[in-house]
Length: 105
Length: 219
Image 1 (cartoon, each protein chain N blue to C red):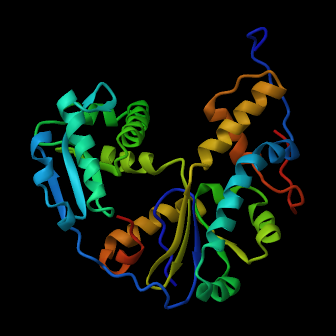
Image 2 (image 1 turned 90 degrees about the vertical axis):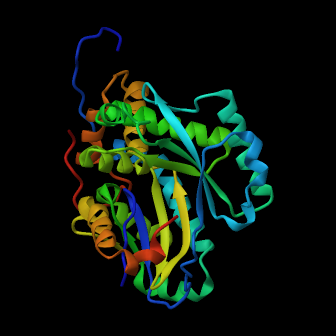
């Protein structure tokens, strides 16, 4: 930035973890907030079945470990997290009646 | 177990309960294209959605065409006092009203700017969404547009067998991580990096927890 000459820098994993923790804190808080507003009848089921992460963001390193520690629930990540959103849309569009309950208006 | 994934980076919490039997209630949707004079004659109590038609594109942005149209939209929003569940939606396009849509929505820049303007207009008028009456979309551009409006959002949903039991939408997602990385480089390393580079960093060594088994090599 000072001289305008391209340079390269070595960046370590732990540096990036520190950078990303702030935005991730918000996501974590959002999950906890949702759980707090979850009807108590469902809490027992969630305790057993846990939390499913999808989308590209689920591929961040350590996301499973961190959430398991902070929320103490089993965390599952789809093997194809990057594609799972579009696969879900595909399934929903193929069978809109069945999935009507989970679509937002 | 139902897992349905609506938008990028959704966190889905599935359960096996019979809770939340959501009724598929009827939606009564009306298009309104007249001026402010007749708004009061609308039977708002009987409707679930009113769609104001039409707004158009000006360059890449969604625009309300005239002062008169602004007044109409404001009056439509006032109808919520009579029916608090009423949703007022802005519509883009209409027959022949979307001539520049295809070129605008075929570029990422155009889609971004359009998405931003949709958000701004909705916040300004306190309306509830956008109706895309784009006649006719090229399929590829249309799908991309939908995803872009949804992008940058994290959704937390609790889904039980028959529907959504709890839901929250956050404005933090992949984009925010990229931005955080860019900021960090600018601040700490005095180095300007592009969005693509930031994304590359995120994809290769992006992480949120220190103690993991396979720590990726520095890049």
